[in-house]
Image (tube, rainbow over all chains, first blue to last red; front, side, top):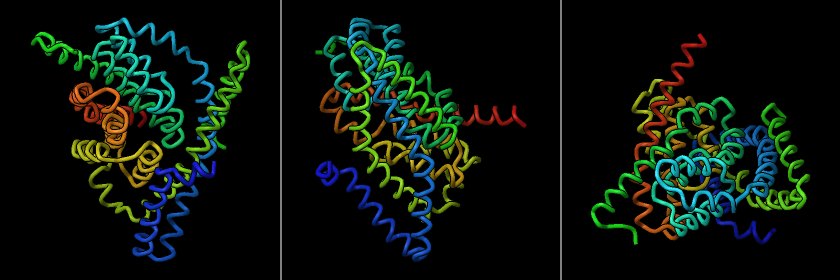
Length: 179
Length: 169
């Protein structure tokens, strides 16, 4: 665990940026500005910390409860607008980071899913993933902001999927199908 | 502990109960996944929050208000989309930054445009996962199909937020 922390590039990247910002704050307002910045961080951590821990526990349970095989079979063969709708719904409930979503996407690709559903799935996972809402949107921005963001975004994966479908169809009618 | 924390803990408890009730006793596996995530993510998030806290001190508030403020209109949405598209790193950095911008007076339209652009165009994910696993053709097709999404989300958020405000006052 210690070794993992010591070799974590993200963590060290953030630490380097934090040190640079400490310098910038000191340059702007001396000790007082640095203390103010750390105070901001502390306030945010106290508010977000307990929410994040709960979210991670919840996310772990969701990940084991989800019927992955069933979803895969369901989506692999579908295409067209219905496929885009189903793919968007599946993106919404796909838990976890890119380590889970991309292998799943690649598997769907190999199973023969169309470009429309594939793009709809990825876009939906990126914008609408409920898992992401629980871990990031709600703890940091609160429920009201999150609800507004979902209200204006829910149709975007369908739009992106449908656009991708139309573009790929024009490729195929030009005799340039996927290999 | 505030209302959101309590709600999330309750939901976690219910999910845990369901996992426990399964014949396979999935709750242990779920807790294991949660623990593995917590160990990796909590130090990163803590450091990212420090970054955001310090950033808030040197952030020129007038600039945020001018370019991303509640009255920044379409300009704010374009600026938010561009900024989101070039923000590197995962959610542990972008969400603390959005929180700080929100406190500095940015409007919901530009912020939602920012988050959507960051979600759709996240460059680190594109190079680390999408290109190697899905190929250039798929990646390009997806980018072209998604180009308008941050602007659409931002403009709709601006309209909806304005509409909700007129309802409540």
